[in-house]
Length: 120
Image 1 (cartoon, rainbow, N blue to C red):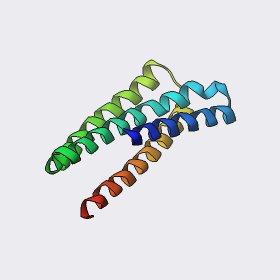
Image 2 (cartoon, rainbow, N blue to C red):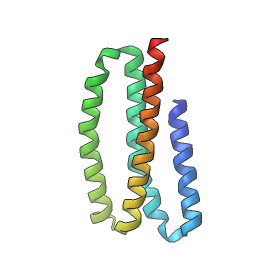
Image 3 (cartoon, rainbow, N blue to C red):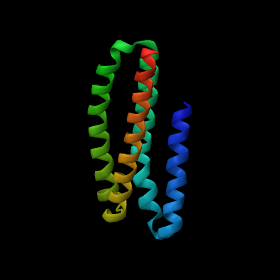
Image 4 (spheres, helix red, strand yellow):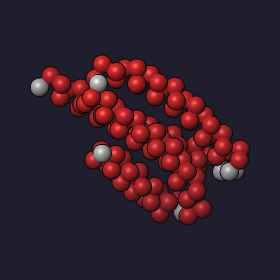
């Protein structure tokens, strides 16, 4: 749970910094570009951590199922944000991709640490 708090703090803090630099006119795109990657990364990390602790042999199947769910989630989210909500594509896509990459690099580092602790 502590790592999810770091994800949230880092994401919200960086969003506030970006909004402070580029201005409030991009606030919707920055914040909504952050939301889907943050929700997906936080949820998957909580599930990975819990499954690793309780049923480590189920971790691979969980991660495959989570991947499929994320493909659908991200696809639907981007379509809704651009077609229905009407966000400006440029700032939204930059924000979405930035948070997507940063949060999944962080999650990969957390998994590396989690799996490294098995051998100790």
